[in-house]
Length: 401
Image (cartoon, rainbow, N blue to C red; front, side, top):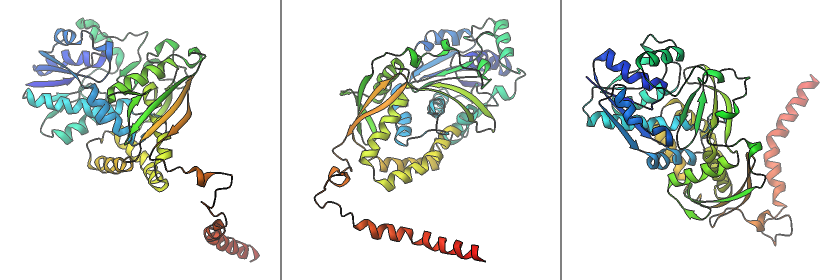
């Protein structure tokens, strides 16, 4: 038997390689997607071989991740429960897609992941497998093995001599990619407890950010950011540049209690410096260039789009349908946004576009030279008030009885 394992080098997947080899007497192939973990990837291939894998793929997927996953989601303006930028959620379909490609290349019998039976990632991985490779066997050890929690895993790792980046004194789980870092579990399971100050990696605390604000410009074409401060960049380049700027000014920290797909509430802490700036700037250029009704209709779809990403339905037909509508709405979303970053805040400093729908001759509070006839508003208001007057007459008549 041959199994391809989604491998990160963290606690769960470090255990996974050894455990699968022991339990299934199988050849284990590790696969790690480089989606922006940076130093976390150092020495990962050697560690995988040392802990049971016969081979380890480490594929650079950063550009694909930014271009084909982060940017489409940003065009949709997606936020889950109005707070979460979906950093972990959006990486899973890409990782699972590449895992399937490797499984087919290696003629593997099965794919495996280290997601727990309580979390969302198990769903995201397995729905992607179902959509792209229904013939592959899926192994989810957290739903079958005897380990009860992270303490058991740490003890197992010690018994097998497996080095893991987690200790009993610092037992929170961390997931990093180009869009964010997430922290959960362990000491963060108390929603009243403030996150430790030394936990954060991408951003300084807002109170420690520079005392002087910094301006940044973002150029957009068809809903995508193509340049930062006038410098043309690839999608991955945009994310790297904005992460650096946002982190410097303490932008993008989010602490929330979210509703998992499986039904429970979970506390998560996130750092999304670049994503926060990009999301904010994108909205600003939309306000200038999108038709009102198109914007409002697209906005009504954001909760559903975000829910689909969060719940693992990236490759579902309904997400494709929504994406087509979103992308059509973005055809004229082009221009430049100027922002001011200051101690955790993102402040609009200006926006401009050759495709702007804003007309100062109409919007002005001064004389407009006949561009807008204010008297026309009388009939507009009277017609919109017709149903309200009818309702009021009925209510008044009812009170007399």
